Figure (cartoon, rainbow, N blue to C red):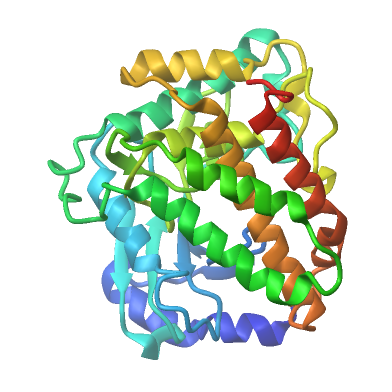
Length: 353
Protein backbone atom coordinates (compact mmCIF):
# COMPACT_ATOMS: atom_id res chain seq x y z
CA UNK A 1 0.00 0.00 0.00
CA UNK A 2 1.17 3.55 -0.62
CA UNK A 3 2.01 5.91 2.20
CA UNK A 4 -1.04 7.93 1.23
CA UNK A 5 -3.31 4.96 1.93
CA UNK A 6 -1.59 4.37 5.28
CA UNK A 7 -2.15 8.01 6.21
CA UNK A 8 -5.85 7.49 5.48
CA UNK A 9 -5.85 4.55 7.87
CA UNK A 10 -4.28 6.23 10.87
CA UNK A 11 -3.20 9.59 12.25
CA UNK A 12 -0.31 8.37 14.41
CA UNK A 13 -0.13 11.44 16.64
CA UNK A 14 -3.85 11.44 17.34
CA UNK A 15 -3.88 7.70 17.98
CA UNK A 16 -0.98 7.81 20.44
CA UNK A 17 -2.57 10.74 22.28
CA UNK A 18 -5.79 8.72 22.57
CA UNK A 19 -4.11 5.48 23.66
CA UNK A 20 -1.77 6.85 26.32
CA UNK A 21 -4.49 7.43 28.96
CA UNK A 22 -5.67 3.84 28.40
CA UNK A 23 -2.39 1.94 27.88
CA UNK A 24 0.02 4.15 29.82
CA UNK A 25 2.64 6.62 28.64
CA UNK A 26 4.96 5.26 25.99
CA UNK A 27 8.59 5.90 25.05
CA UNK A 28 8.92 3.51 22.12
CA UNK A 29 6.02 2.81 19.80
CA UNK A 30 5.58 1.62 16.22
CA UNK A 31 2.44 1.28 14.08
CA UNK A 32 2.45 -0.92 10.97
CA UNK A 33 -0.23 -1.95 8.48
CA UNK A 34 -0.90 -5.70 8.25
CA UNK A 35 -1.99 -6.42 4.68
CA UNK A 36 -3.11 -10.06 4.81
CA UNK A 37 -6.81 -9.36 5.30
CA UNK A 38 -9.38 -8.58 2.62
CA UNK A 39 -12.07 -6.77 4.61
CA UNK A 40 -11.49 -4.78 7.79
CA UNK A 41 -8.05 -3.23 8.09
CA UNK A 42 -5.53 -4.41 10.69
CA UNK A 43 -2.79 -2.35 12.32
CA UNK A 44 -0.05 -3.76 14.54
CA UNK A 45 1.01 -1.54 17.45
CA UNK A 46 4.20 -1.96 19.46
CA UNK A 47 3.81 -0.10 22.76
CA UNK A 48 7.13 -0.30 24.59
CA UNK A 49 7.32 -4.03 25.44
CA UNK A 50 3.64 -4.75 24.71
CA UNK A 51 1.98 -5.48 21.38
CA UNK A 52 -1.57 -4.79 20.26
CA UNK A 53 -3.79 -5.05 17.20
CA UNK A 54 -6.17 -2.36 15.97
CA UNK A 55 -9.11 -3.23 13.73
CA UNK A 56 -10.89 -0.54 11.70
CA UNK A 57 -13.01 -0.40 8.53
CA UNK A 58 -11.43 0.52 5.19
CA UNK A 59 -11.26 4.28 4.70
CA UNK A 60 -14.21 5.69 2.82
CA UNK A 61 -16.47 2.74 3.61
CA UNK A 62 -20.09 3.86 3.84
CA UNK A 63 -22.00 0.60 4.31
CA UNK A 64 -23.33 0.59 7.86
CA UNK A 65 -23.04 -3.15 8.52
CA UNK A 66 -20.43 -4.51 6.14
CA UNK A 67 -17.46 -3.52 8.32
CA UNK A 68 -18.92 -3.18 11.79
CA UNK A 69 -15.80 -3.49 13.94
CA UNK A 70 -17.64 -2.59 17.14
CA UNK A 71 -19.81 -5.65 16.54
CA UNK A 72 -16.61 -7.71 16.46
CA UNK A 73 -15.52 -6.11 19.71
CA UNK A 74 -18.82 -6.96 21.37
CA UNK A 75 -18.32 -10.65 20.53
CA UNK A 76 -14.73 -10.64 21.79
CA UNK A 77 -15.84 -9.12 25.10
CA UNK A 78 -18.67 -11.63 25.44
CA UNK A 79 -16.62 -14.77 24.78
CA UNK A 80 -13.29 -13.67 26.30
CA UNK A 81 -13.78 -15.72 29.50
CA UNK A 82 -15.31 -18.79 27.85
CA UNK A 83 -13.90 -21.89 26.17
CA UNK A 84 -13.71 -19.98 22.88
CA UNK A 85 -10.11 -18.75 22.44
CA UNK A 86 -9.91 -15.12 21.31
CA UNK A 87 -7.43 -12.27 21.70
CA UNK A 88 -8.06 -10.23 24.84
CA UNK A 89 -10.13 -7.14 23.95
CA UNK A 90 -8.70 -3.91 25.38
CA UNK A 91 -10.89 -0.98 24.34
CA UNK A 92 -13.27 0.28 21.67
CA UNK A 93 -13.55 3.80 20.28
CA UNK A 94 -16.48 5.46 18.49
CA UNK A 95 -14.77 8.86 18.23
CA UNK A 96 -14.04 9.39 14.53
CA UNK A 97 -11.79 12.34 15.37
CA UNK A 98 -9.05 9.90 16.39
CA UNK A 99 -8.43 7.94 13.16
CA UNK A 100 -11.53 8.72 11.10
CA UNK A 101 -13.64 5.70 12.00
CA UNK A 102 -14.72 3.36 14.75
CA UNK A 103 -11.93 1.06 15.87
CA UNK A 104 -11.01 -1.32 18.64
CA UNK A 105 -7.83 -2.53 20.27
CA UNK A 106 -7.00 -6.10 21.31
CA UNK A 107 -3.87 -7.79 22.58
CA UNK A 108 -1.74 -9.40 19.90
CA UNK A 109 -1.34 -13.16 19.95
CA UNK A 110 1.82 -14.98 18.92
CA UNK A 111 1.75 -17.99 16.65
CA UNK A 112 0.99 -19.08 13.09
CA UNK A 113 -2.00 -18.67 10.81
CA UNK A 114 -1.98 -21.58 8.35
CA UNK A 115 -2.55 -20.19 4.87
CA UNK A 116 -0.19 -21.30 2.13
CA UNK A 117 1.51 -24.16 3.97
CA UNK A 118 1.94 -25.91 7.29
CA UNK A 119 4.75 -24.86 9.65
CA UNK A 120 7.66 -27.28 9.56
CA UNK A 121 7.04 -28.19 13.20
CA UNK A 122 3.61 -29.58 12.23
CA UNK A 123 4.91 -31.80 9.39
CA UNK A 124 4.13 -35.00 11.26
CA UNK A 125 1.04 -37.21 10.90
CA UNK A 126 0.04 -36.85 14.57
CA UNK A 127 0.38 -33.08 14.49
CA UNK A 128 -1.48 -32.88 11.20
CA UNK A 129 -4.40 -34.81 12.64
CA UNK A 130 -4.42 -32.54 15.67
CA UNK A 131 -4.77 -29.43 13.48
CA UNK A 132 -8.15 -30.60 12.20
CA UNK A 133 -9.23 -31.73 15.66
CA UNK A 134 -8.38 -28.36 17.21
CA UNK A 135 -10.18 -26.57 14.38
CA UNK A 136 -13.37 -28.59 14.90
CA UNK A 137 -13.23 -28.58 18.69
CA UNK A 138 -13.04 -24.77 18.68
CA UNK A 139 -15.97 -24.51 16.26
CA UNK A 140 -17.91 -26.82 18.57
CA UNK A 141 -17.05 -24.54 21.51
CA UNK A 142 -18.58 -21.62 19.61
CA UNK A 143 -21.71 -23.61 18.87
CA UNK A 144 -22.00 -24.97 22.42
CA UNK A 145 -21.72 -21.53 24.00
CA UNK A 146 -24.68 -20.35 26.05
CA UNK A 147 -25.00 -17.10 24.12
CA UNK A 148 -27.68 -15.71 26.40
CA UNK A 149 -25.53 -16.25 29.48
CA UNK A 150 -22.68 -14.19 27.97
CA UNK A 151 -24.95 -11.31 26.98
CA UNK A 152 -25.54 -12.10 23.31
CA UNK A 153 -29.20 -13.02 23.55
CA UNK A 154 -30.17 -10.06 21.34
CA UNK A 155 -27.23 -10.42 18.96
CA UNK A 156 -29.24 -11.71 16.01
CA UNK A 157 -32.41 -13.38 14.78
CA UNK A 158 -31.56 -17.08 14.75
CA UNK A 159 -34.94 -18.28 13.46
CA UNK A 160 -34.97 -18.27 9.66
CA UNK A 161 -31.23 -17.62 9.40
CA UNK A 162 -30.63 -20.23 6.71
CA UNK A 163 -33.45 -19.02 4.46
CA UNK A 164 -32.13 -15.48 4.80
CA UNK A 165 -28.68 -16.67 3.75
CA UNK A 166 -30.07 -18.19 0.56
CA UNK A 167 -32.09 -15.04 -0.15
CA UNK A 168 -29.22 -12.68 0.61
CA UNK A 169 -26.65 -14.38 -1.58
CA UNK A 170 -29.16 -14.79 -4.38
CA UNK A 171 -29.73 -11.03 -4.31
CA UNK A 172 -25.98 -10.38 -4.31
CA UNK A 173 -25.64 -12.63 -7.33
CA UNK A 174 -28.49 -10.91 -9.14
CA UNK A 175 -26.80 -7.55 -8.55
CA UNK A 176 -23.58 -8.87 -10.06
CA UNK A 177 -25.38 -10.45 -13.04
CA UNK A 178 -26.82 -7.06 -14.01
CA UNK A 179 -23.41 -6.34 -15.51
CA UNK A 180 -21.55 -9.63 -15.80
CA UNK A 181 -24.14 -11.52 -17.85
CA UNK A 182 -23.42 -9.19 -20.76
CA UNK A 183 -19.86 -10.58 -20.67
CA UNK A 184 -20.65 -14.21 -20.06
CA UNK A 185 -23.54 -16.01 -18.37
CA UNK A 186 -23.31 -18.69 -15.67
CA UNK A 187 -26.64 -20.51 -16.05
CA UNK A 188 -25.64 -23.26 -13.61
CA UNK A 189 -25.74 -20.73 -10.79
CA UNK A 190 -29.41 -20.09 -11.50
CA UNK A 191 -29.99 -23.85 -11.20
CA UNK A 192 -28.05 -24.00 -7.95
CA UNK A 193 -29.95 -21.05 -6.51
CA UNK A 194 -33.29 -22.62 -7.39
CA UNK A 195 -32.22 -25.92 -5.82
CA UNK A 196 -31.16 -24.18 -2.62
CA UNK A 197 -34.45 -22.28 -2.42
CA UNK A 198 -36.37 -25.55 -2.80
CA UNK A 199 -34.20 -27.43 -0.31
CA UNK A 200 -33.76 -25.03 2.62
CA UNK A 201 -34.19 -26.99 5.87
CA UNK A 202 -37.42 -25.95 7.59
CA UNK A 203 -35.79 -25.92 11.02
CA UNK A 204 -32.25 -25.77 12.33
CA UNK A 205 -30.38 -25.51 15.63
CA UNK A 206 -29.89 -21.97 16.92
CA UNK A 207 -26.43 -21.03 18.20
CA UNK A 208 -23.80 -18.35 18.01
CA UNK A 209 -22.23 -18.59 14.56
CA UNK A 210 -18.92 -17.12 13.44
CA UNK A 211 -19.92 -16.59 9.82
CA UNK A 212 -16.45 -16.97 8.29
CA UNK A 213 -14.91 -19.88 10.19
CA UNK A 214 -12.02 -21.54 8.36
CA UNK A 215 -8.44 -22.58 8.88
CA UNK A 216 -6.85 -19.26 7.98
CA UNK A 217 -9.05 -17.34 10.43
CA UNK A 218 -7.52 -19.05 13.47
CA UNK A 219 -4.04 -19.04 15.01
CA UNK A 220 -1.95 -21.88 16.39
CA UNK A 221 0.47 -21.31 19.23
CA UNK A 222 4.24 -21.67 18.82
CA UNK A 223 5.52 -25.17 19.61
CA UNK A 224 3.90 -28.58 19.44
CA UNK A 225 1.49 -30.26 19.62
CA UNK A 226 -0.77 -27.87 17.69
CA UNK A 227 -2.84 -25.70 20.02
CA UNK A 228 -5.43 -23.29 18.65
CA UNK A 229 -5.09 -20.05 20.62
CA UNK A 230 -7.22 -17.53 18.77
CA UNK A 231 -10.23 -17.13 16.48
CA UNK A 232 -10.22 -13.95 14.39
CA UNK A 233 -12.51 -12.01 12.01
CA UNK A 234 -15.81 -12.04 13.86
CA UNK A 235 -17.43 -9.33 11.72
CA UNK A 236 -20.01 -11.77 10.27
CA UNK A 237 -20.89 -13.29 13.65
CA UNK A 238 -24.55 -13.51 14.63
CA UNK A 239 -27.07 -15.99 15.99
CA UNK A 240 -28.00 -18.58 13.40
CA UNK A 241 -27.50 -22.08 12.04
CA UNK A 242 -24.31 -23.85 13.18
CA UNK A 243 -24.47 -26.24 10.23
CA UNK A 244 -23.91 -23.28 7.90
CA UNK A 245 -20.68 -22.54 9.80
CA UNK A 246 -19.60 -26.15 9.42
CA UNK A 247 -20.46 -26.22 5.71
CA UNK A 248 -18.40 -23.06 5.14
CA UNK A 249 -15.40 -24.55 6.96
CA UNK A 250 -15.70 -27.76 4.94
CA UNK A 251 -15.75 -25.86 1.65
CA UNK A 252 -12.15 -24.78 2.31
CA UNK A 253 -10.90 -28.13 3.61
CA UNK A 254 -9.30 -30.32 0.96
CA UNK A 255 -9.31 -34.11 0.75
CA UNK A 256 -6.71 -35.99 -1.30
CA UNK A 257 -9.53 -37.44 -3.44
CA UNK A 258 -10.83 -34.00 -4.49
CA UNK A 259 -10.72 -32.70 -8.05
CA UNK A 260 -8.50 -29.72 -8.79
CA UNK A 261 -9.64 -26.59 -6.94
CA UNK A 262 -11.98 -24.10 -8.58
CA UNK A 263 -9.79 -21.16 -7.56
CA UNK A 264 -6.24 -22.54 -7.37
CA UNK A 265 -4.77 -19.12 -6.59
CA UNK A 266 -6.71 -18.93 -3.33
CA UNK A 267 -6.77 -22.59 -2.32
CA UNK A 268 -4.55 -24.20 0.29
CA UNK A 269 -3.82 -27.84 -0.49
CA UNK A 270 -1.42 -28.91 2.25
CA UNK A 271 -4.21 -30.67 4.17
CA UNK A 272 -4.29 -33.26 1.36
CA UNK A 273 -1.07 -34.69 2.83
CA UNK A 274 -1.02 -37.93 4.87
CA UNK A 275 -2.15 -37.50 8.44
CA UNK A 276 -4.68 -34.72 7.98
CA UNK A 277 -8.29 -35.49 8.89
CA UNK A 278 -10.76 -36.06 6.09
CA UNK A 279 -13.94 -34.01 5.87
CA UNK A 280 -15.92 -37.00 7.14
CA UNK A 281 -13.57 -37.18 10.13
CA UNK A 282 -14.17 -33.51 10.88
CA UNK A 283 -17.95 -33.86 10.59
CA UNK A 284 -18.00 -36.90 12.88
CA UNK A 285 -15.97 -35.05 15.50
CA UNK A 286 -18.19 -31.96 15.29
CA UNK A 287 -21.30 -34.11 15.68
CA UNK A 288 -19.76 -35.84 18.69
CA UNK A 289 -18.71 -32.57 20.33
CA UNK A 290 -21.99 -30.69 19.76
CA UNK A 291 -24.66 -33.38 19.78
CA UNK A 292 -25.99 -32.01 16.47
CA UNK A 293 -26.08 -33.94 13.21
CA UNK A 294 -25.06 -32.53 9.85
CA UNK A 295 -28.41 -33.24 8.27
CA UNK A 296 -28.84 -32.06 4.67
CA UNK A 297 -25.04 -32.04 4.21
CA UNK A 298 -25.27 -31.48 0.44
CA UNK A 299 -27.38 -28.37 1.07
CA UNK A 300 -24.90 -26.81 3.48
CA UNK A 301 -21.87 -27.61 1.35
CA UNK A 302 -23.56 -26.37 -1.82
CA UNK A 303 -24.68 -23.19 -0.02
CA UNK A 304 -21.09 -22.46 0.97
CA UNK A 305 -19.83 -22.80 -2.60
CA UNK A 306 -22.78 -20.74 -3.88
CA UNK A 307 -21.75 -17.97 -1.49
CA UNK A 308 -18.17 -18.16 -2.77
CA UNK A 309 -19.43 -17.95 -6.34
CA UNK A 310 -21.60 -14.95 -5.48
CA UNK A 311 -18.62 -13.19 -3.94
CA UNK A 312 -16.55 -13.94 -7.03
CA UNK A 313 -19.24 -12.63 -9.36
CA UNK A 314 -19.46 -9.40 -7.36
CA UNK A 315 -15.70 -9.06 -7.72
CA UNK A 316 -16.07 -9.60 -11.48
CA UNK A 317 -18.70 -6.87 -11.76
CA UNK A 318 -16.41 -4.45 -9.92
CA UNK A 319 -13.61 -5.30 -12.32
CA UNK A 320 -15.83 -4.80 -15.38
CA UNK A 321 -16.97 -1.43 -14.07
CA UNK A 322 -13.40 -0.32 -13.45
CA UNK A 323 -13.84 -0.22 -9.69
CA UNK A 324 -10.93 -2.46 -8.76
CA UNK A 325 -7.35 -3.09 -9.81
CA UNK A 326 -7.12 -6.36 -7.84
CA UNK A 327 -5.46 -8.87 -10.23
CA UNK A 328 -7.74 -11.65 -8.94
CA UNK A 329 -10.96 -9.96 -10.02
CA UNK A 330 -10.66 -10.49 -13.80
CA UNK A 331 -9.89 -14.16 -13.17
CA UNK A 332 -13.43 -14.55 -11.88
CA UNK A 333 -14.53 -14.72 -15.53
CA UNK A 334 -13.48 -18.40 -15.42
CA UNK A 335 -13.30 -19.09 -11.68
CA UNK A 336 -16.98 -18.42 -10.97
CA UNK A 337 -18.19 -20.92 -13.59
CA UNK A 338 -15.78 -23.42 -12.02
CA UNK A 339 -17.31 -22.76 -8.60
CA UNK A 340 -20.80 -23.16 -10.09
CA UNK A 341 -19.79 -26.52 -11.50
CA UNK A 342 -18.48 -27.54 -8.09
CA UNK A 343 -21.75 -26.60 -6.39
CA UNK A 344 -23.64 -28.65 -8.97
CA UNK A 345 -21.33 -31.63 -8.38
CA UNK A 346 -22.08 -31.44 -4.66
CA UNK A 347 -25.82 -31.27 -5.31
CA UNK A 348 -25.67 -34.23 -7.71
CA UNK A 349 -23.56 -36.32 -5.32
CA UNK A 350 -20.55 -36.27 -7.65
CA UNK A 351 -18.31 -34.51 -5.09
CA UNK A 352 -19.06 -36.44 -1.91
CA UNK A 353 -18.30 -35.42 1.63
